[in-house]
Image (cartoon, rainbow, N blue to C red; front, top):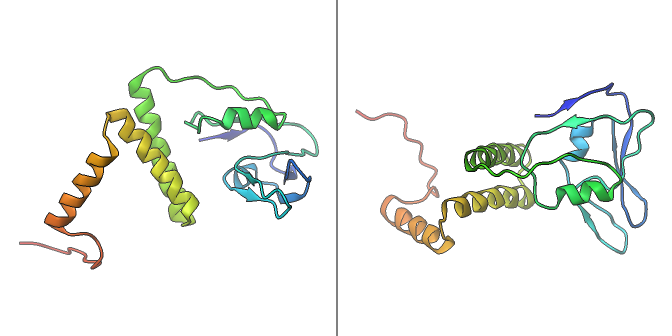
Amino acid sequence: MKKENMKKEKLLQVRCPDCGAVLAESNDLKELLHKSYMCDGPHDEVLTFISEIKHISQKKEIVYNKLVRDRIPEIIKKTGSKCKCHIITDDNEYLEKLHEKLQEEIEEFKAKPSTEEFADVLEVMEAISKFYGFHIDAIKDAKKDKKAKRGGFDKRIVLETTD
């Protein structure tokens, strides 16, 4: 979770780093941070984080304390902003942060189903499988076996009761 340490009445903009086009505008930083932006310019660069934020007055510090993709600190620094990070060395903390990230990505997918959001869920699932040393072929085999024995979810069956 993040905390905003100042007033919310600041107008923020997301701009394309190549052409400077305003891609989004909002007073809500959280709304801007959790979206992907694409410029219609000739470069078609996908922006996965804010390329430029213009504050009308003060800057604000936001506390996240969450696992982020490997290039996010680099992307933040390219925007001229600063960030503080640490590398997780404790396996228990890493697994806890992966589980938190998985819940976050599932919630984002539920709120706005899209291929991009689904890819985020899969990315976290792959990190968890790597943590445990599971190989993708073994996972696919287990999935296939389980489907053969118990079926899939194609028939949309809801079990209501048993006796």
